[in-house]
Image 1: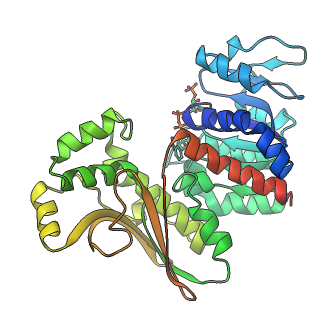
Image 2: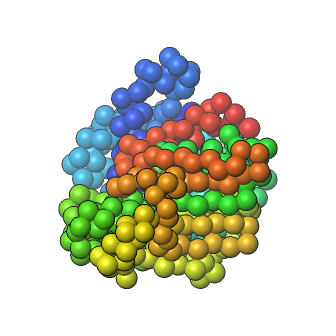
Length: 339
Ligand SMILES: NC(=O)c1ccc[n+]([C@@H]2O[C@H](COP(=O)([O-])OP(=O)(O)OC[C@H]3O[C@@H](n4cnc5c(N)ncnc54)[C@H](OP(=O)(O)O)[C@@H]3O)[C@@H](O)[C@H]2O)c1
């Protein structure tokens, strides 16, 4: 399988690392032999070699902070524009790992459209295109006879999407409730331990969970984006951010945490999605609720189904290797079912 990989930050490099470390295992176990033929970022240039790029050399070039450090080899093309590169390269799949833009999904949305137009499957960690244009992209992929897979967009490699769409196929899912933001869950867990909101936020930033500008996390927008993706995937519903009721955790005080604890409850930032709509809001859950026991930066989702009742999945919601694995799982699915 030939792969074009756009975005070589934490997640893109995580995938490269996995493909390098597990090459022999993937070939022996799944007869899966991926080749990276094209790569690109916003500021580090692009590379294309129809016979494949060397992953070690790519990782070294990235360590040196620019793809110009990739060695010159016969057949290598440098610095094509990203849309041209996606269109012209001989990849079977575009793996899209550029930054999420929840407003209009760009430029990743255009990258995905170019890939599907030029006969490539699309695999994404980027939430933007799916949150903004899932039904259009899905229709385009269907017309082209190509896969559109996005496991990494919700709960990283913890298979929240695959559980709902494949393992639970045949059950009707009527509601999804989840903890989809590790930063806020970490902060709430620390506050329960007696830390103030401000101190817990600083600690989350020190640990690399929270961005320097943490507003997308603490105000609930990151979680809302994941809710929109689940609503699209589960219910084929297109909600916009402005149609969701979104409340973050910034107003919660130590007194709120204490009051919940005295009542045998715990605050969690819960995303709730039904076919009728979606919300993100801090919610008090009884201690025996499966989502109440999910601490630290861990994520979880509970699907309410007709045949099984509630099914809860708990696992990592971020991380370079964890999200790299989500991409690998989508690539393996394409290798197993080429269409
Ligand atoms: N990190 C996680 O745990 C995680 C989990 C789930 C989903 N995701 C999603 O996965 C995606 C990648 O996350 P990340 O953590 O790897 O981000 P990151 O470390 O910031 O890397 C982003 C990469 O995208 C490149 N890029 C920026 N603008 C671009 C553009 N216009 N066109 C092409 N490439 C562009 C950057 O290149 P330059 O360095 O040249 O700017 C960089 O290589 C995001 O959409 C994120 O929301 C991340």
